[in-house]
Structure formats: structure tokens, C-alpha cells
Length: 95
Image (cartoon, rainbow, N blue to C red):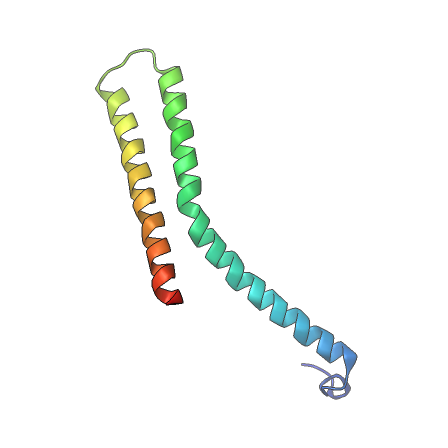
């Protein structure tokens, strides 16, 4: 609990604390939004890296090879759809 002498709006320490708390909350909201927007892109990049690693390290091309490639491609398609949906929702909110 704040001391009574710091609880007045004339106190520079109280004003500094208020501004610091405001910016912390604003940055938290921005950080959550950026994570939500960037996560599908990060998953796409990781999937592409895994596809390349799978192609390089596979000794024989069998059903398992194609299933791993197919699952990564489907994941990439799903993330592209998610990115498109996020952009569409953002446009609708801005109108």
C-alpha cells in the first residue's frame, strides 16, 4: 500500500509510478498482439526448415518420407489461412 504522502497527484514519485504502470500495461497488450500475429509466420519458417532437413537426411524415400513432407505442407497451408484470417479480421475492426 502506498504511503499517504505519495498518494497525491502532486507527488513526482506517484506520477512516475503511474506513467510506468501505464506503459507496462500498454507494452504487454502490444506484445501479446505481436505474438499472435507473428506465431503463424514462425511456424511456417520452422516447417520449411524441417522439410529441408527431412529431404537432406532421408536415406530412402518411402511412405514415411512423404507423410512427413505432407504434414509439414498442410501445416504451412493452415498457417497461411490463419494469417489471412488475422488480416481480414484486422481490416474489419479498422472499418
